[in-house]
Length: 176
Image (cartoon, rainbow, N blue to C red; front, side):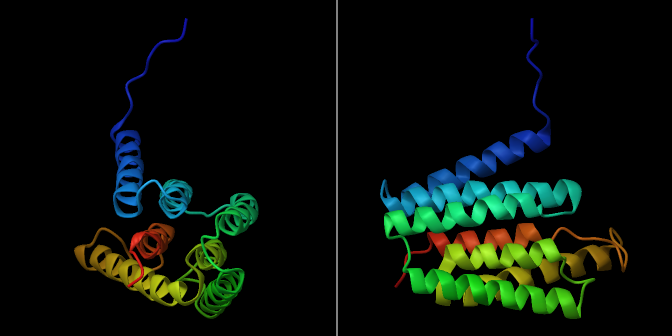
């Protein structure tokens, strides 16, 4: 007989964030393809953020599986134009790899490849807003941790949650 185990605070927080993603996506976009994809992408991105927080890595296997799913869903639902998706993905990947190659202590290779996935989701010009927003948010969080003494220089930092949060915001904000 399996016993019920009470979820810890982290599990409850993840569930609450997942519920918030669903409620906001559907409240803003309704029960439309855009609302459904914003919700699904939000859940996918939440998994990447949690993995990075817990293990300080963004798994290549997840990225390899996620990219074709994002492309297929976007094309099937007319969520974003193929050209915008391709341009966003290439831009995100190029910028991410350039930063990770030049400043490997600032951005890991998993985060760089995640930037490409975010570009596929947000498209171009959406990625132009999502990447800087995520990088600024992550940089400010790192600065706060350093100044508060809760982290020290050279310590690893989960950057994916900030990239994910900014990309998801771009996905749910209706185009003007």
